[in-house]
Amino acid sequence: MTKQIQIAIDGPAAAGKSTIAKKTAELLGYTYVDTGAMYRAITYKAIQLNINLQDGEKLTNLLEQTTIELKPSATGQLVYLDGVEVTEQIRSTQVTSSVSEVAAHANLRTEMVKRQIEMGKDGSIVMDGRDIGTHVLINAELKIFMSASVEERANRRLLDNQQRGIKTSLETLIEEISLRDKMDSEREASPLIQAEDAIFIDTTSLTIEEVSEKIMQLAKERIA
Ligand code: DC
Image (tube, rainbow, N blue to C red; front, top):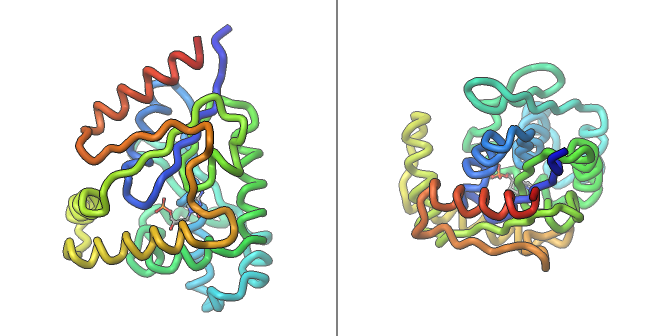
């Protein structure tokens, strides 16, 4: 029988994690879990309910009463919040600029991590985020830490946004991404950090195909 492994992909905002993780999962026939979408979903709900995003206790209580489901579809992963599809809504500029604040609360993270560990427990999983290799799939057979220069990440996000009809400037994106990097890396509760046993890939001058090939090669070695 083929070995069913866990693959953890971490890195800063807009490093190309989700594109690569999705592709890897597809090629291996594995389940893909976008953990950033889970933090975005609870942020979206909190904004709708006008909850103070600095109130970690309230946000954790809210999460405990919330279901977040990720379902694969022909057009990509769909996100359901309490049974309602919110895939597009969670990508809004408002959610994007507020999510790091919500994700900084330690108790809320504990609840998220518990759910993610459960999702990954049977293997055959590719999960991306900021703390997957360090707190969620800590025994993953393959851990990747992906990054790229801020300028390159902002450029990729600009193209992404253009395709989705969202208007932004490169300068604004550079500022936004730098701020999110800072908040995600400097927070006390499981900050963005490379796991000791993770393999670092700088994607600045690599194409999606090149990164994907590299990761598939590593995955096949672990599965064999
Ligand atoms: O990957 P993304 O941009 O959709 O993630 C949104 C935010 O969620 C990001 O600013 C940091 C946070 N996040 C996190 O703290 N831990 C994760 N495992 C995934 C995302």
